[in-house]
Length: 171
Picture 1: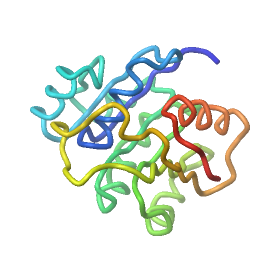
Picture 2: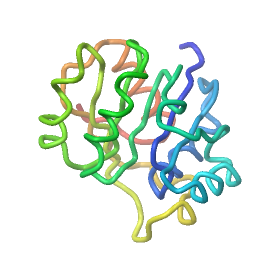
Picture 3: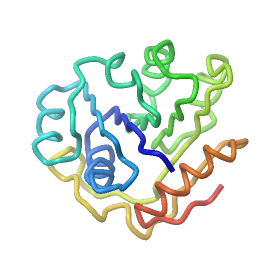
């Protein structure tokens, strides 16, 4: 597998923890991050969860191979709508949110061949925020991936990331 540029939108507990793990991923070219709160983004960079802080949604997704959305479920469709024009046609968007059907109905008309799927680790913590992000929080947890279909290359990327995180994928 080639090196990939990863973007993480939302740098709280889940996005920050994911970034901390991916910092050592052998296929990582660069991990870019964005958070609506610039102080959270700066803290994520200080902790090593991201290599680069983007100042806009457009900037964070440009040239990204994999985009993780670590957002409150209700904001996911509007953020997706905002980033969609800037995504590479080959980008994969992985949504860490727990709610699928409602989000899928909202975003599916705009997909136009783009791969977008849920990548929901069944783990986390009681406390939210970047200050509680930690390595290992995603280890040994089931990771639910939906909805199908997923291309072979998309499935390979998902399985590689999940394996690296120490999680078990369920399609």
